[in-house]
Length: 258
Image (cartoon, helix red, strand yellow):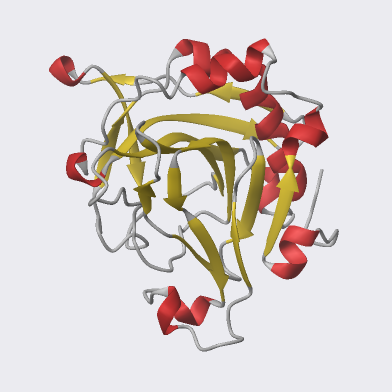
């Protein structure tokens, strides 16, 4: 079991970058990767941002730190809306303060994809927890998110479109693919710039600026130590839709509350 007494790059610096294709020995031609990529082909629009070019599915699970066992939490059926899962960030996302967003559930095929489970195990191994937190299960959120834009004059926008903190202690982003797009620049900055745009961060104050460009290129953040941002995407010069597809993973302690 990992505790805060054991440092990691992620905890020490507040963020870290990873190459999971090399870590897992996975090529784009692998059946599991092709299956994961196919999940993004018909990803439904984000019901809270249909005009923003954002498409997504979401699932929740429970991770036991002491045994490293993971299991999915059952989805909720909401009549005409179908199978959904609630996602709540309190006031950490200024666009949805106090809102439980009901998001389309991940498919069974995605839940069973071995790459998803490898990602969850890898991400957990980068986290560190206090003795008290490690005594309880961890809630795990898994998001499949695709930004897509057809019109060269439009942008597809992540949420929130500013430097922010998510509220979950650890958050990871894993690129699945990008196609015919420009933008999608990640910026990491100190927490004091939460609510600002990267242009508002004085020269030399940003901690990192980079793009995820290769399949399973990834990064993670320790939420209390940094703020982070990804810029909108635009369609590139090719004729096809501009797309950026990622798997997002977050970990939160499930403490007893009476």
